[in-house]
Length: 354
Image (cartoon, rainbow, N blue to C red; front, side):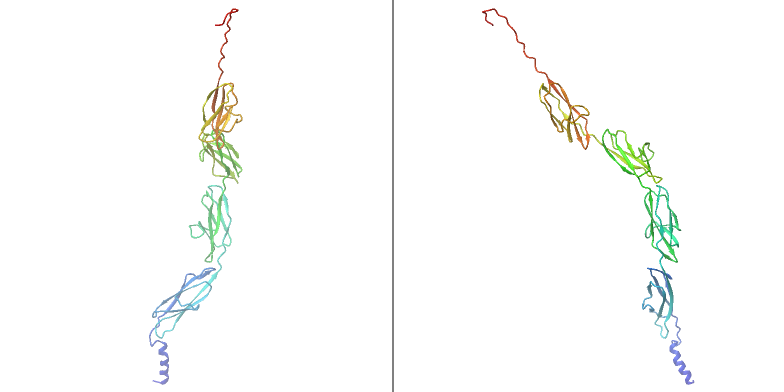
């Protein structure tokens, strides 16, 4: 064999593994070919053939089968195995980056109770998706316009957009329901009327029940009939053209305190009398009339002036501004006894009276 051929074979045999086949290959997969700003993708080198264990070397300097990258560029992995005489294999993948789209813009809405709202997202474009939560949540609809179900209370929806595979943060869109009127309750004593009021609307209608009741008044002020027990009325206000839900307004009735007890007395004419009343609680007031009049004294005890005729006084108690009925207390005057008669006796002169 010529000398030149021997030299050629000596050089060629190590490079071919002495006739052994080199079957090592590698592919690179990615969780995405585009990186949205602020995110990353995972690149994985998938080895096949050859003789394990494998050795990975990325052009980033990392030596694991998978790496995470957050910048665009071309990433190359060099894979080696344990097959003697075989050369490493390489594989590259290009990753592009896109700026994450801005949060969509959408205006809040105010609707009448139990009506739907039409929400519209504008800018930056893309494919809009609507949800019921800031993250996760339920998918509601797609498109730049979303018609909500009937709204009965303040509700927040969320919209995001996807542009070139990148999804924006979600924007909150609030749907308010036309508010209820501002109301003022009243506390009254039993057997009185109550004055209830409402404000914040354009006009008002009063009812005696939340639903299916009778209309009992209109306007911002409603004066109830005489009440003996606590009663709830309901007012519906027109606010910005919307009828509010029936709003409860309470007329709280405070029961009258228990009337005091006091004993009648009988005295001689010209006597000064000390009267005393008892009650579980409250402030006592004495009067000289069954209704009205000015209080003679605020005390459980009252001392009369000298009396020459039968006189009736009245005592009541007051608790939290509520007055009891008045209890009559009669002082009966006994007239003085009739003085004895003086008898005149006639006698003769010089006789003795016997």
